[in-house]
Image (cartoon, rainbow, N blue to C red; front, side, top):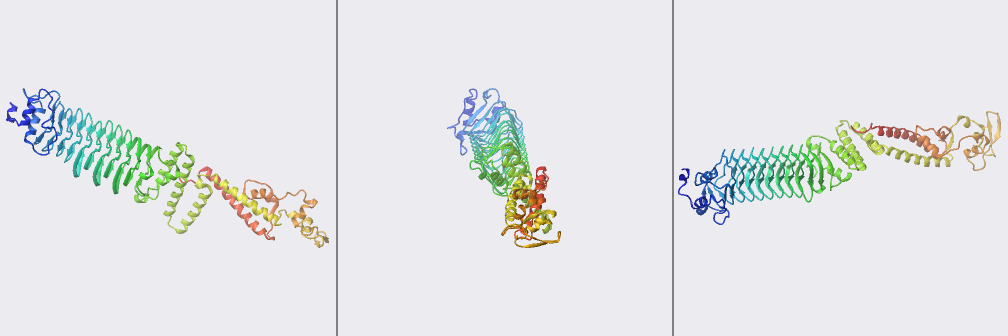
Length: 559
């Protein structure tokens, strides 16, 4: 019989055998984990394997499986490629060597509270889960390509594989991964894992500076990835992952200065991204190409300037965070495209404006697009090789900014038109009061009435048309224009109106007849100034009108 090779049984083995059929064996000694090799609680690994594989007549385990706590297990528990159709319960045990479960097929494995030098369980298949709650593992846990019908539960576990990979669960298929409150020295690799529900790392502590601390590239989680209150020194990678729920980084600390701290490039988050309540990111937060439903954040939780990458990142809305142009432009300003060899990224601004519009914040959307135009044009100017050309472009951009806000506020041109119109009213009105306007009709200017109104009644003027000297018509102190207006011949001549004259000068598409009948008189003191402003306002009117049309048509916007 196979049992003969284990005789004589060790004291602990005798106790196990005596209780096999009852299935109620739970503890050896006081049930606590041995800190050293205790002969009274020692169990040979080969003997355990014999029982786990079904034993033999008289030594068959109960249908509940083998349940044991407080044992010191000597040797290697080798179950490679074995099929164990009962639960394996080895809680609070101390293993002399790392158990081997490569390619094994089991039901459930409970190692809660146990001490293990490692676990070699690549390609393990379990109908239930693997439980290491509160366990202490001083080496690597290897679960690459394993398939668990239940959970991988390592809540409160301590796993130390300093400098290496502490938990290697690459391409693992599992329902949930629980690492809540675990303390891990070394890396976690769950790249390519398929989770039916959550990857819950709330309160996790991982230490692997300057290297990948949590590698979760291309994972697919049906639920959420929870890093709430986690403290990770090293890189957290979720590159190209698909998260069906939320990515919760509330109160978490990601520390990896000078390198990637949180890598979310091309990550799809169907739920929310939480970065708030004292969360801290020291290092690069890379969200290039990420897609997120909603963002719940606080500005203080984002990394410093130069450590945020948002190019081609898409999100649906902001919840409980800044929802104004100033706050979100400060957020976008944390990017430095120059670090990646580029001068400007327009997409983050355009997408932010789209989100603002969808949220009903149209004014904030416009402010973001104006800021985008300003920065994009500045980047274009820097690319110009000629200093003269840069200066000319700067003047053009400056004019477009103050007049139509780069085409984003074409109505601003009408504000400027109104200001110039009012200023013209003041200039032309004052000039007219100073007798610095004269009729713009050659017929009037050559008429005797106009000529004689420039001469006082006490003076004579020779008229070439009549070859006679005629007395003037102006009263003492009366201006030539005022005198002319009193003449019967001037009764049908339009009166000067500073409001209409300024509008007629400013708007090229209007014809108010004021400009056709009146003109500043440069021979008068204020006439030269009024005439100079007349030409200036005419040019400004054309320019602002064209800019308004171009602004409404979108011709001045950057594409």
